[in-house]
Image (cartoon, rainbow, N blue to C red; front, side):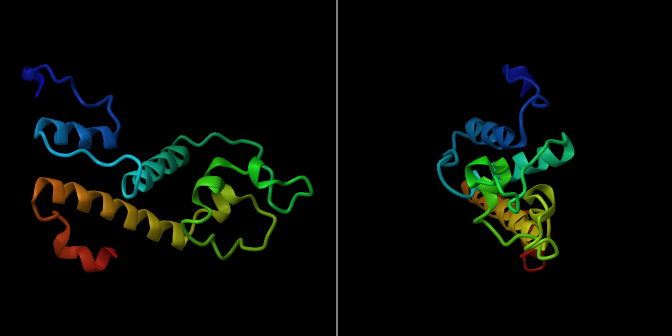
Length: 138
């Protein structure tokens, strides 16, 4: 790749690396306006926020001044994707990270990643490398 003038990929996001391969093979790109692209983009954004966590003051939904327009960005983006963590449901705890992170979030993350990579492997016209364990993933 580097001999063809394609720069090293360390600076590219994981999603861009998938796109680079599709470009190199002259294959159809992902539709960026729909799932699974949007869900996996959101998943990567969530992963990055957790890995590079920066504490912030967040208004809890139990606050008198709470308004959904002031909600944390992940509450706005993910509130309708899956149920919140049942251990914090109905409490005054902030949505991110407590109410967000739980079994339902994990299941959504796996389903989103599998849907994205399934689409990728379909574009390549090959069987997914994890196909033999698919039933254990979903």
